[in-house]
Image (tube, rainbow, N blue to C red; front, side, top):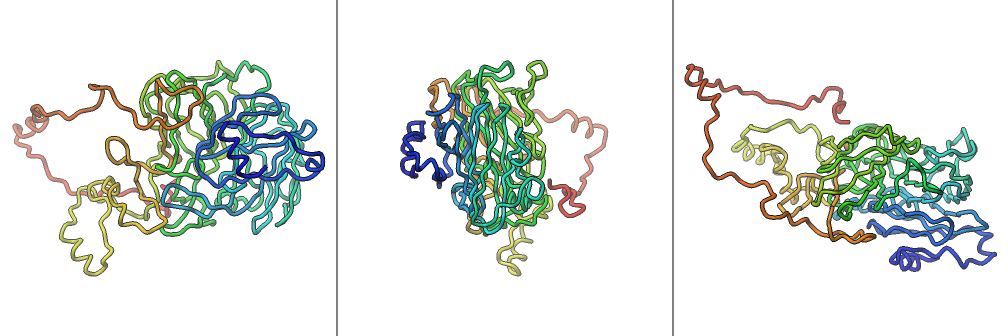
Length: 465
Ligand SMILES: [Cu+2]
């Protein structure tokens, strides 16, 4: 199957996996390469057991071929170019043209055969995170198998035994290979109706990942342990992350896996969700409770379900505020309330590029896009219907619309808020706060206190995780 054919079928939500000759079946399935970072339409299965496919945010699902009842996939581990957001392309490592690699979707009980070709400059392997499988298929180099040498192809084969949400990533030179973007999503759909697995109208998935890419450069630093500067959903930073577009009252499942080196409290606005599954499988329905933030630890997966019954454009983001910002220099002291006029001019005579960051808060940065080097994302550069959105990084929106048709994942544009339902400016009298009056009457003029508040910065960037 060539790339054009794949795109042609993908446009109709299906992929041809039939009509392959016996001779062809004796060889490797041809790998399908994806070069676009757009969100692909759900891949409707036309062979094997039926299921309701997921939508991978800014990603795609790998097509397979059926070979004597076995689902065969071909992953190629290789250097890729990934557009992190418009204006920034990073050189990463990934699979089949993208980082993350394609999502693999199978059905509980499927026998799966995955050919893995190593086109990286070093040995690799794939670990099938969370799966029940024979020990020799678990992918830990040295423990379960020899590393896949450069240029070689290894075969993994196992039965997808339990339904759920999984990931795949190397267990060879992990720190480098995961820092470079080698990872992918895996969904095993239930074979039959499952008492703890709801049927949903929309099913989104994405990985949390992070990179350390110096402003102006294109390759991640690979010896970074915790001090990453680029926080992404599926190797995309807002405004490069597509919105999750749903129909009013849809039951929406959002599956998230964390392959960064820190935890992420993922937060939804305007709704509550329940965690209906973990990396260990579906949660028993009696154990679920509503919440609006779920913390996803390193190596964990969570699947949340929300009834999208409030129309609008709702933020969905990591709640660590520095994870909803794009790269910036570190060691920026708090300058709020410090007036630098005058000082800047003098400093600029010494250093023409000198600029004060954050004198009126960091929101100034929203409009400072022209001051950053090429190949760098503005720290905050999303533009919404009401002005710049002060967010980057791990941020997207859930767009809930009455007229979004079932199966339509296209972006409906910005929400038009009904008249009288938006925060507005107060133009009446502003009474003086009673507290100040009392202080004055007591003869206690407020004392002017000068102080400078700084972020704790002990131990390098210990506070920056
Ligand atoms: Cu985070």
